[in-house]
Image (tube, rainbow, N blue to C red):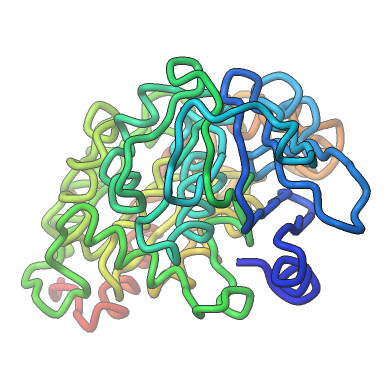
Length: 392
């Protein structure tokens, strides 16, 4: 997956590292020995290349140094004479890929954005002939993404804590390639893969039948229901209006969103996905092509809404509509008043730091949706589906 000079170096000497703003990826096409308890990778000393070591945090957000230092295990790559390296306890005949389920794992957006999509990007071309070594091993992560992991690798994931010893491999990749939020840049992939290929991979992994909406009859609308922050305070009225427009409505409560098998099956026949900005919208990856994503962008959240879910949706073959909250629809207006900087100048509030902005716009905010105004957005969603709203 290296390109340009990195690929040339890999072909010439069998080792190369690709360093980007968000991630480091080192590849050895020559045999390595991996000490799993210490997460040290012994790579062969290459003639004419000085003995050196490199440290990689195998999680795609390395620019957050505090996070890397506290929740992502560092992997040390040591270039050594192979005869001086530790002897093998276990011999494998496929390439190893080392990555971490530390970082922000536990949040579905970060899991897909920084682990699952990069993992697909990095490992798909091995055609399942590879072995995953999961630093910061989380059993719940492995269980949650079992279908994805087992479709990318024919082998059980190695937990360094319980599979200690020196593991020898014919080659290794340390770290995962990353392009952008829930995105694959086709021109940076030798095979030309895209997010459409990733979605097809998900359909295969979860045995989903529908690729597009041509086989659906009555349009299904799934409304992501939140409790607490960014909740819809008049959700019942929203549902009534949606049904009057001709949708078959599924209200996805928080307890329904924890099991990916359930979520994938629920969203595969979905025509329209509606939700306020939040991790639940990551599930747009399971929508059939041609479906519509309607994101409710809260007050002061326009930029994150567009960059985290809006632009990625179009790269997945989806239609995207944004419903921008007006001040009267946000609970922040009743909390702070119409003339407070929180309402009239969100940029000045957010300039005080991420935590300040997060506490107000992401945590304190909920919505009382203008039903008439929102209905026009859903009528547009119907138009994008090639349908029209009932008269009257």
